[in-house]
Length: 227
Length: 83
Image 1 (cartoon, rainbow over the protein chains, first blue to last red):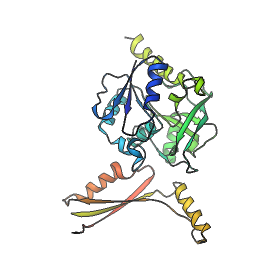
Image 2 (image 1 turned 30 degrees about the vertical axis):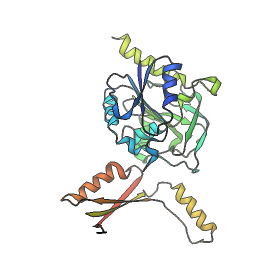
Image 3 (image 1 turned 180 degrees about the vertical axis):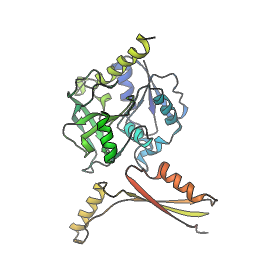
Image 4 (image 1 turned 90 degrees about the horizontal axis):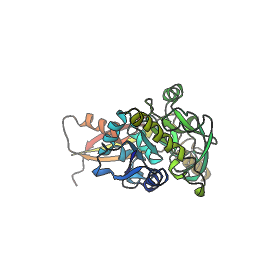
């Protein structure tokens, strides 16, 4: 399986994402600079964390207008997996690929520590290797991870089972403790916590490995087994 | 040339932790009369005049300058300074 890690000016988790896909999972992966990208040959797109464009205007807002996001949109429309983590999640909401917005943390602080998450939906292509209700430990590292949307959207997220991860102890004020959501079609996942930084027990947790393994397995089942 | 001033504010009902911190700071300075504070943004644009100026500014706000999920906006258009 071939992963593209999109690198914007100001991305800083791109290497972690690349490391997870390439070295931990042993799959093909490329760091793709946002300007000279051709995403056609990639099976999955990873939007990494960081501070694209210095978080100018709103976090993720400027990156969301870049040309590469049109390609990400086309890729998503084909049903291929897109994972946005942290700033990548912010880029996905800003570009309209996911509903809602990420606002300043309730306590106004940048927070960087491990959080316990609850796997709310294990039927997505990103989470089949988890148990429903399982508690996993991923690091968070954000100042603007406070998920917000209107009541109507929130009800829709619930009704469609689009809430994939919630915080056990909500650190940032997110509505319904939301840590990660998926689009209705089930192939675009955005989350504030970092699965790519939870891939080695030496570094605190390897709970993130199964997220990548789920994607790979499900992709193989769809595109290789049936080929 | 026109000077366009775009005001972006948080929607009513959206929590504004920054505003809350400002209100509390003002209260602690002795300005007890401040009961609420909301923080927004002002964006100034110098724009060449054209027939659909207003519509285009509105488009810019919807596409980039404001996030309709959590923000409202309004703008004012005036003659740009000749300076």
